[in-house]
Image (tube, rainbow, N blue to C red; front, side, top):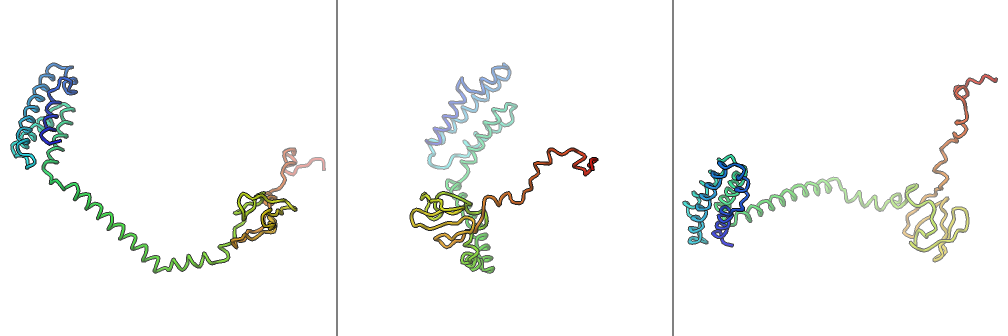
Length: 236
């Protein structure tokens, strides 16, 4: 849509009887007259500007049309009506858009993207230099090749399960206390003594009963009296 057509649309909206500004101003007759007058003048100025723009498109708008639009925006801004002030802000945005070069938005986005890329390179380059200085890659390889890295910590692996640790979904047969045997390769897994997986990682032995080993049975204390808890036994 051409710029002159957009200006005519704004002028048509200003002249419409269903304009929100007119509906809002109907509550006060004096205010209604002022608002209607301002809208008519603004619509006429926009029509005049549209006529000039239609002859100059796609050339640059004349300074007279821009001055008229700026005068309308100033009149709206100086009024006490909030809606007119909002319309003044819209006209100001249109004036700024007309005054800016056509490719200004694209150039601004390009500059922002370049700035972001430069910041990324700056911080990423610093991290890479620090990693190289501290030989992080050698430390990572040493940790991965360490036998301690291949071993599970206690309670990290399941303490007891009926499925094979090396073959997910394959059931095992219980052959003893905390011992199961895989039905696929007949390998025996002892959860109490520990076992080694086919990948080479070792699972240390553990038992479910060890989770409560350190707890003391305090059930009898609920039947003691206050004197017994304080050590005041009068029967002795």
